[in-house]
Image (tube, rainbow, N blue to C red; front, side, top):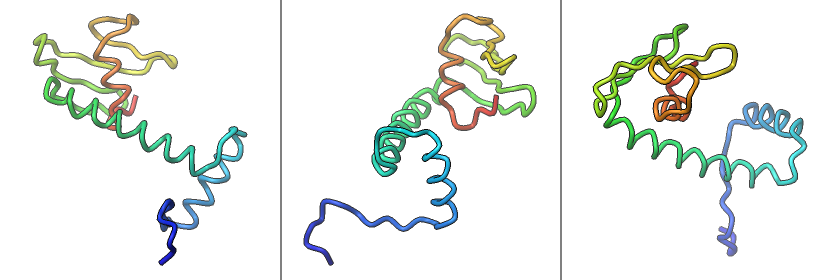
Length: 112
């Protein structure tokens, strides 16, 4: 075991790593891949925490090609969220910003 325990040695699938590295290099970012991965991982934890907290308010259903639907228990509303021409659309708030679109876009189950 190395004495310096500052870093961890993670084992990842080599072909997945090489694909990720190739796509990352195309971005030409000004930080190392490892730093970027950690930033993305921490961001993912924040997103996951948010969606888990909100899941108590919403009952969800994936509508495949028709977007995402859920029952908003707080407002007693049935909501459909879908992607139309690259813009999120809410069946209640239309093109206006709303909690429904934020929740859907941050939820990994949302497929657009």
